Image: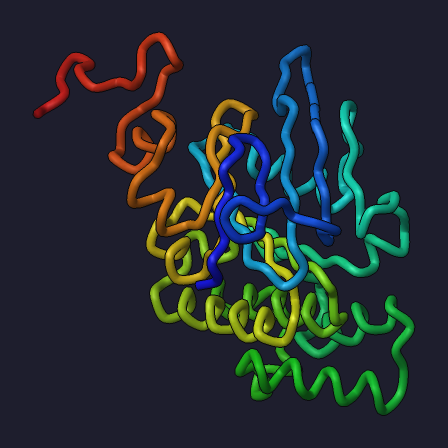
Amino acid sequence: MRDAAFDTPGVASTMPHGQVAHNPLLDVRRLGFSAGGEKLLHDVDVAIRRGSRTLIMGPNGAGKSLLLRLMHGLLQPQEGAILWQGGRMDATARRAQAMVFQRPVLLRRSVIANLKFALSVRGLRGNERAEKIRTALETAGLSHLARRPARVLSGGEQQRLSLVRALACEPDLLFLDEPTANLDPASTAAIETLILEANARGVTIVLVTHDAGQAKRLGEDLVFLQDGTVVETGPVEKVLANPRSEPVRAWRDGRLYLGPNTQSLNNYPGRKN
């Protein structure tokens, strides 16, 4: 794991101890978002360094998936700004990104047709497109299923297809929203291998996960959200082993954090110590 340290709560600096992240690939500044009269994200600051693997973690309802969608441009921030390489998040910036969801989003077509469509949208045709499709199928271990309807594949096969389809478009930044949720260990390992191989080729990774083991296997930098606020950042192993904040300690220990005045739910009725 690279020597990355974050010292300022709320600011994910992906540089060594005591330094500031200069010229991040993606820079989130004082991001805020509300819905239904409820503030869902508060003054979120995150800087993603090119080539890094950043994990976003936190309890259910913390705002992790919402943050991912905002960073990818699927939603527009109501407060703050999201910068791409120091500039505005425009159509060109979004074309340099891809996203894989928890539930695979696949067309009602064959495996190969799903790949062909995605690459055609990016303007690829002919031999170049055919070669990328062949490589994607081989990488995902789906060559023998190329003509099968994508939606009849197993969950693990569908997610591998979603992932290699995104990677075939050669994004600079790949967002992943719990891509291995509900998958068996073998499928999870296959997805994790694809993610690490992509990162080794230079793809920047931003991943939402609830799995501490997966975080240690895949992560370099950790951004921890609680109630829509960044409460702690730092190297994954350091934060999970010795968290500075009570929300992270509660999450790690399997306790329910109820707020700064209650610390966490330790002695609710019926709890066995």
